[in-house]
Image 1 (cartoon, rainbow, N blue to C red):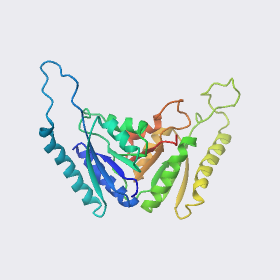
Image 2: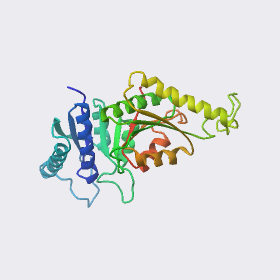
Image 3: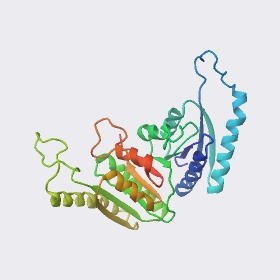
Length: 292
């Protein structure tokens, strides 16, 4: 059996939307769908005056109701898939990180039951994007049904896995792939001498533009050898990186980004561009971590 698509549910409208998306992803991959609900452990002690922790026999009907609604939504979206559901004891991030170790894809909603009013993205989604072991799709925005898969090209070694994932998604969906590389005069060092400041502004704009075009061309050419059937558009844009990618997501059905770009600090698990897209993109975003 193929590795499953895993979706986390908590009963929120956001998580039910994620179930429908995850079911369609499972259908595309001919993979089973695993619906997971994390049930927190009782705290070791409660402060004076706090309400007692509900016993399991009280929680059980509510949890099973959440799972039943999720399963119903899954079959509405993809009637022919195999669906498995499970309740796992533990904190949501901990449970989903473990589930991601054996999954082809993890899917979560943009906000959960515990999100504070006005919070654009639940903390579980952000943390799982940084620590999960498989690609994470965060369901947000309003995807363009006929839009392309949009790949944020950054040229980083870690981003190679994201490139492969984007080509695969475009093939599964039978839609074009737009490989978008955004650059500006802060994209690279002005010189390569050891004493140069790391954020020096590049003066030779034509030289930098040509270098960024080569980076984009090489990124696409490396994957097109075995994916010639995919219609690929190479798009080079000089602009501020995060606003340009967010704006481009308006016309996409899915955006794919690597967990870290070229500018990430060593040890950083999720770069600022990835975080910005998770919070502000207009379509679902899949964050793909590089191979470890």
